[in-house]
Length: 359
Ligand SMILES: Cc1ncc(COP(=O)(O)O)c(C=O)c1O
Image (cartoon, rainbow, N blue to C red):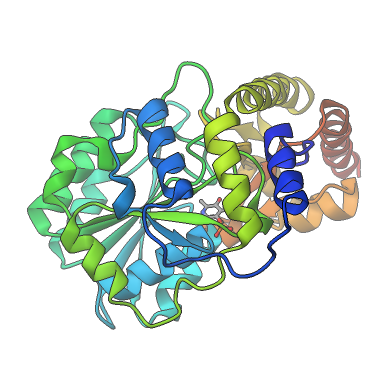
């Protein structure tokens, strides 16, 4: 995010430094400390998710949780299912662990990207060992409904598939939608489950390295922590202070940030069709600050699916190319920036397209 740092986070870091300034290791392996309690209290208040703080585990980042869970909940060669489009590190993590990546393309229904549950069931029946859920979803911005999560849990229970749920974007959800942690549903008790999250997206603290793993049960906790030694090393001591501040005093700042991002989101959803008609179609993000944009018609007209290359070269705008997410002809635009810069971005996208059409 290109927004100023949240004041409570900044103050916590300043006071950490001023009150002795311990810059040594964070105690990654401590349990039930203030940071775990702050996380559990936030989860209860925001999502009605009753997390036992003594079961929360610190990790340096969310991807380390997912990577570790893939190793602990599956065996070499096992199939791990990922929805497509996907956050690119998922597509790398599965084969890097020696597991088989199974891509389950999402379906676009009435402008909304949905999990293909029929495809998921086929993969689960064929013997998949785990499924990586990303909710809110990067890159489509979908926030899964209770019905969708229940359907997922029913399938996971029926076929004994572990759910590894990345919920790092949970704080960033727009009015009319509500983040529901899959682990908060009663049906989740029957399914092997790890939730990975952190303050890093909501409060923009990713560089401070502090994330949380929440096992669904004691058995899941045991399984996750029987990992390689030192797997959880690398939690940042300032990240611990920042996370406590975000979860305990960061609500007002977050509400303001989400409302600003919502303004950006609305601007994008109005301006893009106004300037570019139907040649690029932006899905409505229900959460996250990411816009997933269908450029397939544009790609046909200009004769290239390399959207990132095209917009960088012709418009000076850096977008992420759909191909990295498993879907060429699309692009992901991060709109967590100032309105002024977003206006320039949109103008430049339009100029790039029109200059290509004029040729
Ligand atoms: C879905 C998702 N998971 C994980 C991450 C990375 O989080 P971390 O830096 O904590 O690994 C991101 C960052 O953009 C993300 O969008």
